[in-house]
Length: 73
Length: 136
Image 1 (cartoon, one colour):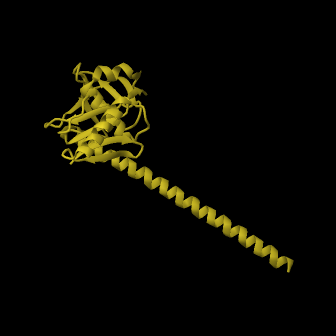
Image 2 (cartoon, helix red, strand yellow):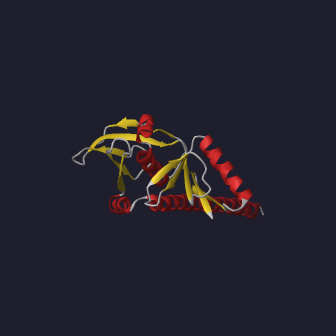
Image 3 (cartoon, rainbow over the protein chains, first blue to last red):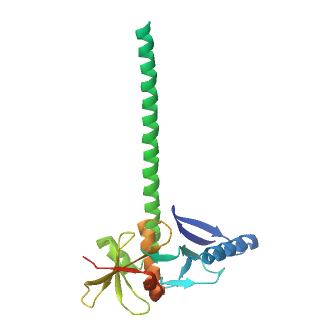
């Protein structure tokens, strides 16, 4: 099971998907494109734990974190 | 008879007032618990994504430091959801302050995690949108 973690008002919302299930995979890809299309950043972690920003959906990634577009505070 | 009617009316009003107060107290409790849960969830996520060194710093001081991916500068991200980033000089003292936050309202831990990832993966992009402030 892979997980998409979306930061939101509730702290975060976690969406799990099975990369072997076509329907589940398509839904995860659609969610990825929708969130990044809105300006959210998608980040994953490499083996050493460092974050990496990703711009394309990778079904093999175990965990992807999304946070909203950044603005001056 | 009139006195009894008046007392009965008064009792009814008092009961309604008490019921309203009880309902308000329940709503306040629920709001407080929900906010607390959000904070806890944010902290859990932050802790999962911090390096061991950053986590130790955060536990000890309520801040952690990151290295900007483009300039190699060191930044201190303090607990908070605004005006909480300090650029450190070679002497490890704050030189300037910068502030950029996610466009949606998030709990402090989520804001800090977004700031960490931005500085570690796209420092220039983050600083482009940041507003500066003078640290005290």
